[in-house]
Length: 290
Image (cartoon, rainbow, N blue to C red; front, side, top):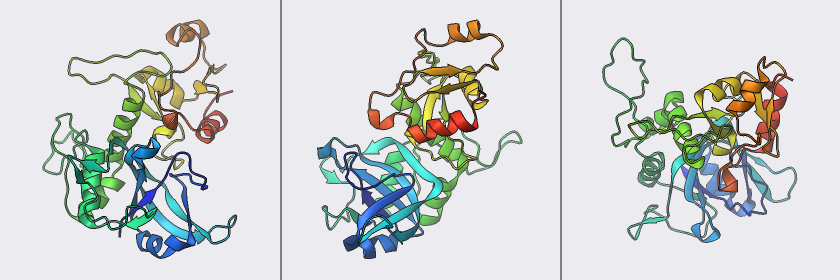
C-alpha cells in the first residue's frame, strides 16, 4: 500500500528523504504497510513547504540504532523522484488527498485513487510515454516532444512509470531545469528555442550508475557542452560553488571564457534545491580528473 511521509526542512529528525525517513514507534504499524510500495513526501505549506513534492520506494524498515523507540524507513537506492510540479494539499478548495482521515499523522497510508491523483499532478504533462506502435528509429520507451495529458489509472501502470528510466530522466530534467530557472549554472546563459524549450540539460552529480537519486539536489542545469565536460571530469563544483577546471583541459583560456567570469556557479533561489555536499564530494573524488 502506498503512503505519505510528512517531512519539514527544519525537522529535528534524522531524515535524508532519498535515503531514509526517521519516525517514532507510534507510526510503526502504518509504516509497515507501506514497505514494498511507494511513499509520497509532503512538506506542510504552513511551514514554508512545497506540498507533495517527491515519491520514493520504501524497501524496508529497521530499528533506529541511534535513537530509542524510533525506526528508519529505508529508501531503495536510486528510487527517489522529485516532482517537477509540487502538489498543494488543496486544489480549488478540494483536498487532493480525498481519503484523508488524520491530517496530523506524520506517517499515513494512501489509497490507490489518491496516490494516482498525486502522481499525475506531480509529474505533470511534460513526460509522455509512447505505448503504441513505433517507427524503427524509436525505442519502446521513446519520448516525444508533443505535450499531452500524462495520466494512468491502474497500479501496474503506475509502477512502470515510476521505474522507467526514460520517464524518470524526463521528469528529472523538468524538475532541475525549473529549479535553475532554465539557466546553465556554469555559464549563466539562458537560451530558449523557438518552441519555448530551454536549451539546457540536467546533469546528475552522482551518476545513475552509482545509484544517484533523481532528486533536484543531485542535479545541476548545464548547457550541452558543459554537461559533457562535467560528466567526463573536466569540470566540477566545490562546496562554496566555485567551479574547478581540471588540469587535463588543454585550453584553459577558452574554457574560462566559456564559464562565468567569477567562476562561481549560479544555484537555485530555494536553498532546498542546492547541490548536496555529499553528492558534490562524490563527483570530485570519483569523476573529476585532478
